[in-house]
Length: 253
Length: 228
Image (cartoon, rainbow over all chains, first blue to last red; front, top):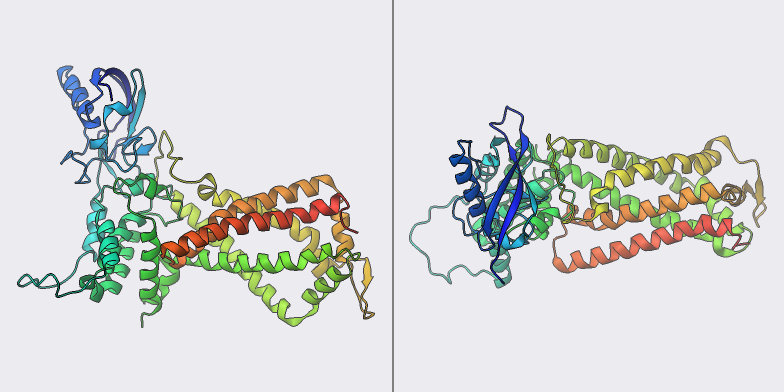
C-alpha cells in the first residue's frame, strides 16, 4: 500500500479524574504518516500539547505489539478501532484518510471507572481472576510432557481461550457492559485441561460471584464482544461457561 | 447455598429467561397447530371442536396456569434484567457500536414490549370472551354438544383491516424476537458444541420464519375470505 500523509481532526474525551465530569475536546494533527500506529499519532498529538503548554492526553499502553492488553481506546464507535482482530497499538493510520474526523472515547462501564482521560481502571478483571482463575498446585519438578495425556482439540480450544489478553474490549462493546467473554475465556482455558479440572466447580462459582459483585451486566448473547475482541475469543466459550456454572450450582449440596 | 445461584446470579437470571423462553416456544407450536384447524375448510367445525377441548379438558386448563406463570415470569424478569443491564453504563458512548451485533439481538426488550401490548389486545379479543365474559354465538358439534363459536368470533375480529395489520406487525415482531431468542436460550442453558450451535441457529431462524408466516396468515386468510 502506498505511503501517504494526512491531516486529521480528533474529538477526544478529556476528563481530569473519575469524580469530575468530562467532555470532548477537538484537536488537529497534521502531516501524520499512514505507516504510524494509532498510538504514535497520539504521541505526536501529546508532544504538540506539551509544546503548547497544555495537559497531554492520558492513555494506557505498554507493549505496543498487540499482546499485552493495555491499550484501550474506543475509536469511531468500536473498541480498538475499525479493523477486526486488532488492538489500538496495532491499528495503523492507513485505516484513515486525509481530513477524517476521529472520535476517541474511553471504555464506558461503571465497573471500569475513568482514572483520567482515556485511561480506565480495569482492576475489576484482576479481582475476578484472583477469585479463582488459577490452579492451586505445588509445581515441583518439571514432569514429562507425555505424562498427562490431553486430547488435541481440548488443547487447541484451551489455547484459543488463553489468547485473551484481558483488555476489556468485550465489556466496552457489550450493550450490557457484561464481562462474560473475558470470564468465559478464563474459565474455559482451565476447565478444558486436566490441571484445571479438580477446582473447576469452585472456580466458576467464585469467579461469577466476583463478576456480579464488580457490577458487570448479564450476557444477552448479542455477539458484539466476539466481533470486537482483538484475540477473536469465541462466544462459544460463554455457552461453555454457562454449562460449567449451571452444572456446578445445580449439583451443589 | 450455591443452588439458589442457579436462578439469582447474573447467569442464573438468564437461565430463567432461557427456560421460560423455551417453554413459550413449545407453547407457540401447540397454539399454531390448534389454530391451523381453521384451514380445514369445514366452516370452523374442527377448530371449534379443538377450542372446546382446550377450554373444557382439565389437562390444558392446568397447563394454562403454567403458561401464564411462564409468560409473566419471562416478562417481569426480562424487564428487570434490561433495567439492571442498562444501569451498568452510566455514561453512554457518543458513537454507538452497532456493527458487531444484529439490531434485533439488541432490541429484545422493545420487541418484547410490542408483544406484551399485542397480548393485551389479543387476550381482550379472544381469551377474555372465551373464558370470562362468554361468547354469545354458539356452534353445534357433530356429537350434539353446544360450544362457543370461536371461529365466528375470529371471522368477526379479522373483518377489520386495522386489526389484521396490528396482528401481522406483531407476528413480525415475534419472528425477530424468536430469531434471537431461540438460539440464545440454548446458549444460556449451556449448549456449547459448535455443531449444535450451528444447528440451533439455523433451526431458530427457520422456526422464526415459519411461526411468523403461519400466525400472520391466519388473520390474512380470514380477512380476504380464503377459507370457508
